[in-house]
Length: 458
Image 1 (cartoon, rainbow, N blue to C red):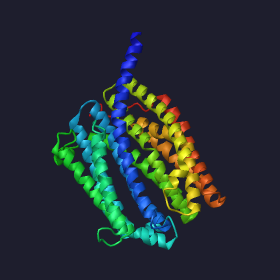
Image 2 (cartoon, one colour; image 1 turned 45 degrees about the horizontal axis):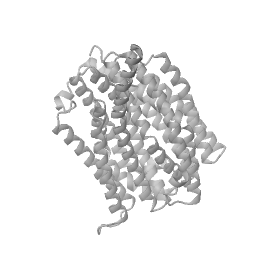
Image 3 (tube, rainbow, N blue to C red; image 1 turned 135 degrees about the horizontal axis):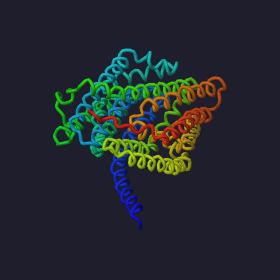
Image 4 (tube, one colour; image 1 turned 120 degrees about the horizontal axis):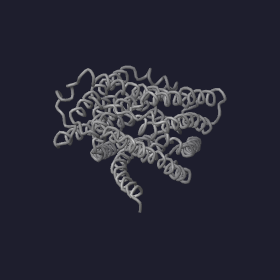
């Protein structure tokens, strides 16, 4: 065996060990979180299709918030990973401080809007008054959890990108367990508690989110983790640090904002195609998110691995690792997509819905499965590679143009003008968005313009 091959095998062993160590806990955590949404949908589904649609549309507000938070936290994670690569703990704490300030500030805005004008928010998506009424009941309660979610998000991303992915996984598991038990008790009125329906689901979520935040803070501050920081350490920020942080993270926040608004535009189109259609899309989307958990784990693991190597000034190794993950992901995506198609009928049959919703949900799920390999490539490339190298402006271009120039016009034309069945509308919309990002994203990756050391000189 020649020396070069031996070195490559040695590097690969380290790489795969690190990939599994980081990706698996994140994948399990996302599986747990997706299971939480699925459990909610299944339990609410026992009450009827109107309730499914109401909670689904109300959760569009949380979906928007989570994407804003994801923008702030994933932008901050670029610094967490690169500072971790050079073992600069003081600046990791500063990055966490900025992450918390931005995340909590955004969640306060969402909480205010959701608590004061939920009817106006939901009327953007649907004109069904019963859906608006039930959704508003849910939204007024569940928005109390938004600030706790922001704090949990910030610490979870900091832990993941300093080599502690198992902690957020454990915390999410606790939250799901609490939420599931309380859902059963409060939605259906068990243990001599009145049957609260959608309001019970909202109360259960709030309690679970509070518990989740408390548990993660206790774990961090009762142990000697690198992100254990005093308020003074988190807010000891220089002008140079502030400028570099926001120059990098602002495009990520706008990226998530524009992409999330585009996805909400999709939901508006689907909702206007009928309550049954939006119920079907919510069911299929929940299942798809569960199927994507492995790739979300791979994407975040890639961001940490590549970012750490860039911070340690190992750019060639960063490119090599990125290439391996972005190739491996779609291959696994083909397998997962095939399984979804094979078992789509059995999966959808879990839900007690009308034949129309059942058939529509199955067709949407099959459309999700067909496009999955391309979606996986784009997710890993944008989240795991381009952003981890600080190429956040080009990532913004890919996501914003993919949704607004390709996806949204396709949804409007196919769904509202040509009035095609939801299976065609969904597939053509997602395919247009994902193929655009695949073509331009591949070119950017190969060009290596994303390799930027953002922590040098700080």
